[in-house]
Structure formats: structure tokens, C-alpha cells
Image 1 (cartoon, rainbow, N blue to C red):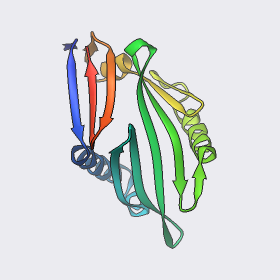
Image 2: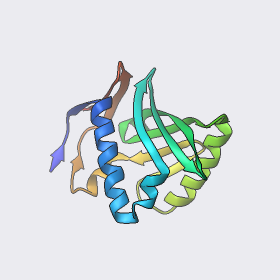
Image 3: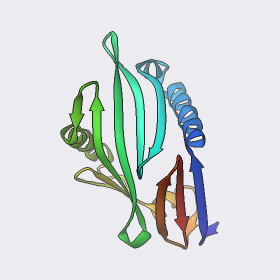
Length: 156
């Protein structure tokens, strides 16, 4: 299959439904203990940011966790930049927390095709990602917009 022009629009409800399904599938593969540590996960789309919120059980008290993520086309539309702007856990966090998490992510993706971490940004090569599903991308990622609870992606 080859895709040259495509536009996607996702609502918060659609993204949260997909997130719930992905976490359930991950729990089946890795055991339900993982799901017990993450409560009430949700995505909020606001002010150009994708905001992930949950309560994480670390010990006996669940702590609120929030990650603010900025999405942007990269490499002239051939890639997607996923930048972790800020992470908050309970009363702590900020840019320093984001740097620590991204350092761990850099180690995890080292040597994986189509993935690279530079600072607080994960760059995803879209053609490599699509090829994993036997899809050839003929277009480029032109625009990403997060407005009024929707995420819109424009490939052309």
C-alpha cells in the first residue's frame, strides 16, 4: 500500500479510547501489575500541547502525574518530533524531570530503526514506522494542529 495524501483528526475521546485499549493490551502481555500502578490515565488536548495525566502508585499513596508534550513535523515532513516540555509528579518536576525521563528513553531506543532522542525530543522517522506495517508513505507531514480538544495531522 502507498499513501500520498491523508488527513487525520482525532478527538480527546478517541485518543483516550485508544489509550485505554493499548494499556489493557500491554497489561495482558506484561501482567496486570503494571495497570494497578497507573490509575485514571487520560489525554487532554489544549493550547497546542498533548497533556498526559494519570495517578501513579508509588508506595501506598497515588501521586498525580502530568506530562506536557509538543508535536511538530521534522526533517521537512519526513519525521515527527515529540518533545517532552514538562513533567510534574505531585509537587515536583518541570524541565529537569523531563530531561531525566528522556535520558532513560534515549537508552531504551538506542539502535532502534527510525527512533532517535536529542535532548528532550524523540524524533520518529515516519517512513520507517509506516514500513513496519508494509505502508509506503509518498507524502510528507505538513502540519500538526492541536485546537479545541482535537488533534489534526495533514500529510500531503
